[in-house]
Image (cartoon, rainbow, N blue to C red; front, side):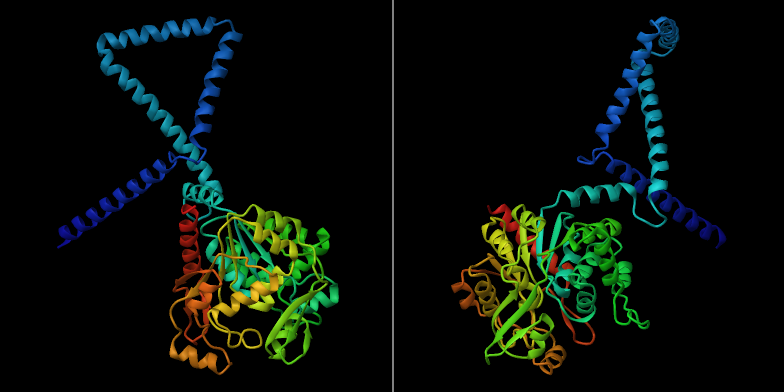
Length: 455
């Protein structure tokens, strides 16, 4: 019994050793992968050693080199007299390569121990992922609210060249209070996007979303909003504050406000009321006929316009139609840049209607609202969720006067848009419906790959 147990333990140890050796070999072969910019610098280093040696030899007039070469020639001649050259030559070459490999292995291992924290992935995997992400397409995502941050959370796996263009029309909650008390642009939506694009997303999201539960003046404020407000004050404006925050947080991509103007939304309702203020529009509970902003035609942020012009892929939504997506498009320069772009452009439609904004809206109604606000079509296709939510979710949302957005195919075809139909929904145990970041990004990436290769 004990001998059998020892044999099993020995076999297990041998298998574990083989797995470790195989993993180590695989990791080292990855260093030879093309595009890492490692092999070229290694060869340059070797060339530098050879060149320095030659220079030193010339400097000292070759005298020691001559005797060294003569000594080596004698040794090599002695060896070849004993061992044939066709055996000794390969053995010496093999010995040199083994020494070189051993030296480089120890060097890289030492560097890896310094740069890699305990439990993290291998340094070579980090380098390969970094290289792949920074070679990804230039993606521009436009919107606001939780919808845009959900999208970014999934997209950052495919490219590090992401620009999120965010509305600054929010005037409710912590953002509204900071806007009123400090005269800063609302940081709430920007905060969510920064957290979504950060590598340490979970911890950073918890930190940025943390709301103070006590304290005079602090009660109800989120830490992220206060952080961005302080950064904006230190650097001079929101754009520089966000850029500085992005460096501190090491995010993938960049987050930009659509404009630096103090924009206030207004909406005309079907009953004749005119509501001013982003938070009050939804609370009014009417049917929106027209939407605009004060000041009219605010100037776009130059960096945002530049990002759209250079984009390989433009995505609008998901998010509240009138208070998250359209406010960005009320900046004429942004709408003009999108319309002039030849990149694939897609709108991600909401899964459910939103009371006070889109009650009773179909997918085509969402498209018409964007076209009407901008005065022209801005996107080629619309992404629509395919599967209906569960009965439990339908009952929950019906109690809030919210229903699934109906897909009216013929009306969409008349508007000249392609339909991308896919299952991109996540439903939690309470029946709350949201877009799933990973599924959404995967579908958008596949559509972009097809549109890109179809050119």
